[in-house]
Image 1 (cartoon, one colour):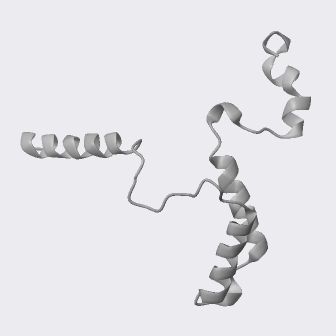
Image 2 (cartoon, one colour; image 1 turned 135 degrees about the vertical axis):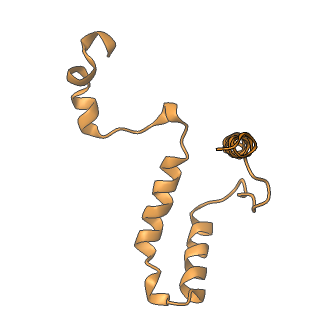
Length: 97
């Protein structure tokens, strides 16, 4: 690879990596009082306006919303299964629990 090509390639990678953590402000903001009624309204809108109305599954929409809510938690607040807590001593050792 030529030196200029290598510099351009590395610059693009660096710029891409630096932009990964920035929050975008272009999209719509989530209202502070967003609740289940708003989620229901969005699902209803999708059911009424989506091209293939049978493809919108209300149950799957709620499951997806719950998954997104859990994924939005900070890493220190990860939720583990009941089995993890029951076997925690065996997994981490008694001195770390």
